[in-house]
Amino acid sequence: MKTNRCFGILLGFAFLFSCQKELEFKGEGKDPLLVVNAIEQNDSTFKVYLERTTFFLSNEGEESKYIETGAIMKVTNVSTGEVFTMNQSTYDNVYEFPFVTAPGTRYKIEVSHAEYPSVSSEITTVPNVTLTSVDTSGFSKDGSLHKRAVLKWNDPAGENYYMLRLFYADPLYDYFYQMTFQSNDEVTSGQGADPLSSDKPTFDDLLFTDELFDGEQKQLEIEFMTYKGMTPAEDPIYTYRLITMNKETYLYYRSVLMGQEDSPFIEPVKVYSNIEGGFGIFGSLNNSQIVK
Image 1 (cartoon, rainbow, N blue to C red):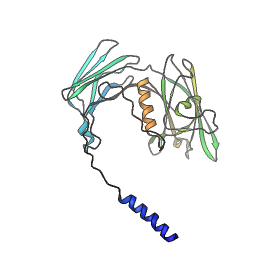
Image 2: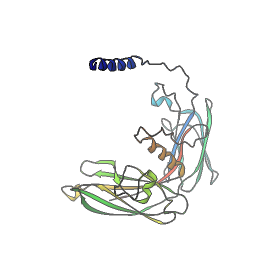
Image 3: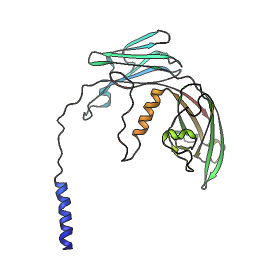
Image 4: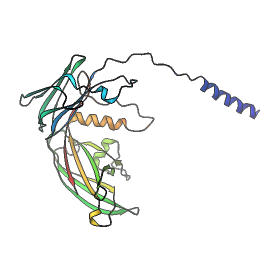
């Protein structure tokens, strides 16, 4: 009886797998739309990346989506009334305009093309926020060397959005890469962390708002593992980068980070877009960093 029961179970599994069948997709993809990506950095050249959408089952290469000609791209400085127009990319799908992005300025992008619906978007660039100081100290934890850093800056009045990143440079082998860090500052609650927990969550990109410190000086403490070289010249060098961004850029990065979470209980996240008539992101950011 036991042998028969086991045989029956195996036969059932075989039946289930034998019923699987690959079905050919016979639907049609939607008409392609323009994709505009332009996250402008203060005091840097104003750049716009232009391409088109493709059907998700398409075998087209990445460069086949690039739009280098045929489009009329207009950028208006709404604050001053200046208008700049391009109908040819500078290289690949990149359109470089002959001006640098100014902080606290209203810009509008409009793109028309004979083969696609027109698109547009309008934003105000962020103010320049300066990371004023980073105070560091070393300590030992679980037999390993760690570093504690307290970052300070003055938050402008009004809604402001931030991302904190930490980079590591090895002077001996010329390495430079992004590294993780820990923090249980109150701002981490915006990324699902519990500030009251004794366990400090780990971040690659700490994304947060100024809701809890609007218009005040902010101090944010982080910790990370480090080491010391054989000589002082071999000690690692760290770059503490504070990124200020507008709400549109914050919502975009937030949707991207949420989409990267690996859990079977999380529903797919749609990447934020603020391009009317198409897809993509028109955003603004400012970088301020201290190297030490």
